[in-house]
Amino acid sequence: MKKKIALVTGGVGGIGSAICKRLAEDGHFVVANYGIPGTETKWLASMAAAGLHPGSTALAFGDVTKYEAMAEMVAKITAEHGPVDILVNCAGITRDTTFRKMTPEQWHAVIDTNLTSVFNVTRQVVDGMLERGWGRIVNISSVNGIRGQFGQTNYSAAKAGILGFTKALAQEVVKKGVTVNAVSPGYVATDMVMAIREDVRAQIVAQIPAGRLALPEEVADSVSFLASDKAAYITGANLSVNGGLHMYA
Image (cartoon, rainbow, N blue to C red; front, side, top):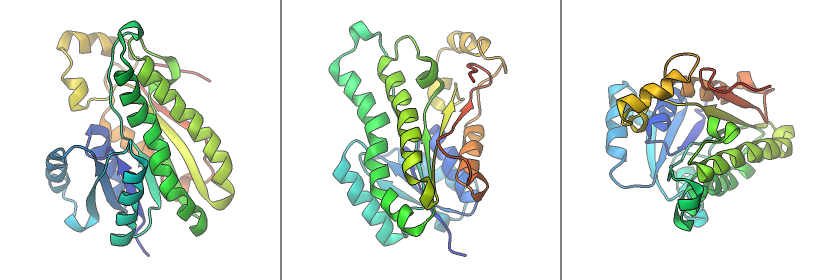
């Protein structure tokens, strides 16, 4: 049986790398997108350390904020490896500050990277998924897109927008075998979070009923399920992976 092709935007980051590993372990051919030269070095080492065969993964450079760049990137992936069957929109940045101090540059950087990118990349693959009658789109949102967060109006708005995008597109494509879902992590033990001052990190953990940060692999497990045939009847859903930090009906 032909391997499915999975594209993970922001695939070289902490959560993105864990998702790439898990999807490769599931038997898919995984392409990790990255936008900053040099950031792929650690990813390559981590894939090798995980024991993954070099032929099961690939890298794709491209700026997710640019529509034409994503069109070119996906066309190249299709030519070299095949059409994308699974898309995980994971690219994201933060530019935190209170709203009254936020600059237009800080606003647009986060909206373009975290939200507009979801349109830019999904638009390139969805037609092919519909034509083939199978596809999985998993969008990485955040607990702060649901509850909001002080100092993150840009980030919270982008991540909330992802949830709206997910529910709307899910209704358009489900009859053709394509599902669209979201995963909303809470605080995850990535390099970025672990770099936070220890006392501040302790305050964050104290708010989490589970009493710890999530592991990147726990987010990846959720993505793996939503990308599988087992989740064929789940679409327009949001799976919260936050240790009880925020619970809602």
